[in-house]
Length: 99
Image (cartoon, rainbow, N blue to C red):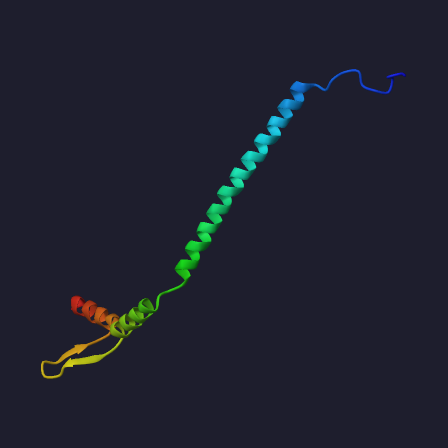
């Protein structure tokens, strides 16, 4: 029997080992980076979702504040105390300061 068709040498162990280690290191680094990216995306999504939902109390409070700041009311007619919108009060204060 002749061994003419077979290799006579072993594989080069050192380059194969270095290549294998580089491959494993590349896979580990890729997995770590993908995990960090995943964590950041999930955190951002959860944060955005929580901020998008406004509680009913907050909505009612803002509505009440808006009505208070932008409405006219008579508080005490005898003493002539009135509630006016904040924008109008600013205009009146600026007009008084100009005079």
